[in-house]
Amino acid sequence: MDPNAGKKWDMHWYDWLVFAVPTIFIVSLGLESAFGTTPGPGTAAHRDFRAVAHWFDPVFFQYNLIMTLVAVLVVPSLALSYTMKMANRKERRLYRDVPPERRGEIRQRMGRRASFGTYRGSVWLTTVVVLLGSSILLLFKPVSSSCELGVDFSLGANMLTMGPFMELYETNRDSYYSHLVRNLTAFQFGFLGAYVYFIGSVVRAYFTMDLTSNTFVDGTIRMIVASLLALVLSFAFDLLLPHDVIAPSTAAPSDVNAATPAPPTPPAGEEPREATSPEGSGNGEKLLSKQEVPFPARLSLLPLVAFFLGFYPKRAALGIERIVVKLTREIIPAMSYRALPLSMLAGMSYSHELRLEREGFDNIENLSNADPVDLAIRTCFSYSQLKQWIDQAWLASHLREDYPGFAQRTGITNSEELHCFFSTCDASHTDGVEQLLVALSADTATIASWRLRLNTLRILLNTNSSPQENEHDLTEREHRAPDIARPEAGTGSPKSQTDR
Image (cartoon, rainbow, N blue to C red; front, side):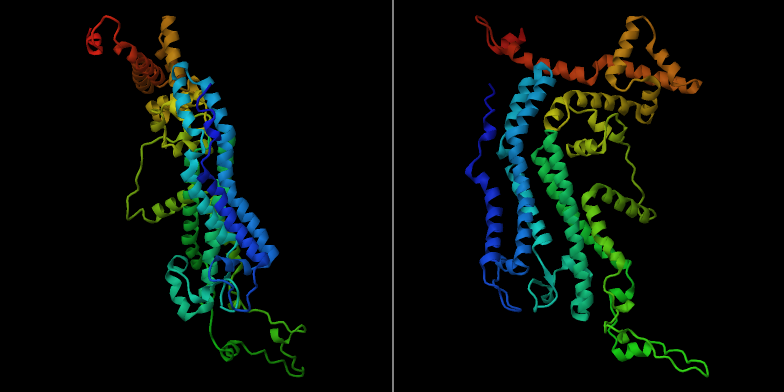
């Protein structure tokens, strides 16, 4: 029986604080909302977080508290459930797939992952970030004057939310508040998009038995970066707005009337018609002019753009990088990297590529030197799948851009298949290189180039017996090393035994 099998059920008392602390904080706000004293107009009940309980309708606020509590507790709950149920399943699957000589390594390394203590630091970090972000999104209420209950931004804001528009606090309060609301909206929806993506990635990692502490750290960094990126890019919306929206006109009513053209003079013989104006409508409502509209319709796209930045941070960052490279092409020379993307491998998807990049394998050249057993322990992929990808990466790193065409024409996709092909041809006393050349090209110059490359590959395969077999031999030597050094009865020291 595995001695580590019961460790996943053990939790220290302080591990439960990650559930208790957010619950106590949110429940206390709910009790304050239900039984606390409602403040008078313009007067806060408290000078701490308890004042938040009186900014909204009690029923609406308590509903937001429940959503906040669920959003926060889902983080430690998934980590706890994974250590209790899924970690042991992954260990059994790897124990069946991995070669027998390395099964002891599986038991030793997976035993450390089957406890909540492995996730303690990352879960605390993610829980705090989610609590802060969801509080801004669901609990905080921005107001523009001290006469209302909420976060009183009439007292000012910080440089993070206002940036160069901080001077509007003294010159134009209307534009100041418009900028503030726009930037806060971008920040909140950027966080929301990153949180939705994080929940999806955690659920996927849960069911694929790939939930590690790095998953929570990556999600935390994503939420922070996406929120700040959306906030910074929200300043670009000022370039899309007309000048009268950025700095609304403060002209007096007389100036506005003077700027309004006079009604045309009716022709002779006709009675003058009464001029129509917004003030003269039957219901007495005053229509807003174009200069008085603070938020144009295209600003409604700001939450969508910010959510996109949070949900697809890699694609958004790639788009920004391309724009910057295009704008600075004449100033800074473009950098090119001789690296093959992981998308060249058969069976590789966008999610798989992101998962391998998180482990430090950004391209095919990196993956060709990976250990399939180590990656099988650290990721959701099976040993056989990783072994196939690593074999493909080895062959692709040698053939470079010609690898897709080679695999399509010959049907050989990895180094193991190529080694088996050469071995079969040698056993039947046929030239495997010449058979491959018939399928690859009919051009004389191209054939000469391919002949040299194929002969080089055959020499490398015969020398190394493929990267995986070489790794297998090394593992066997490591397992046999203690037997060689162990002294037998009646012999000398381990050193003399080894020397003999």
